[in-house]
Length: 145
Image (cartoon, rainbow, N blue to C red; front, side, top):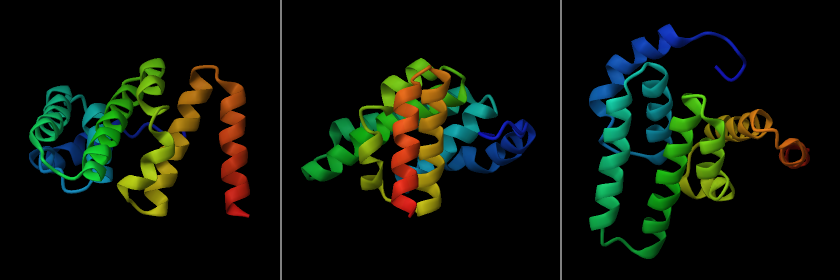
């Protein structure tokens, strides 16, 4: 999808399988993938329910501070994913920029981390933040050497 390939039909197929699982919150990166796919498939009510249930569990959770921080990072990232998938890149930037450097705290594979780094660069480019996009790409390049 980030490469410009039309895969909406795939998201529609996948959404029928993941929709029933959307509020289980097994792992933050799974939630982010669910939000992207469900948004692209037009299942906006399900996306809002996923985010709302995580926000509600965060409000009543007595977890240690680090877990509360992870939930705050996750909620902001989920909202950024929703906005990006909807084409609202300024809003996506507002949600993602404050937490992008902390996404690693949520776990996820290198490949998952890479998808969201690519999404961040896409958001930066689409919002005209060229210097920041160049900086992020340069840092990623240096990290891979």
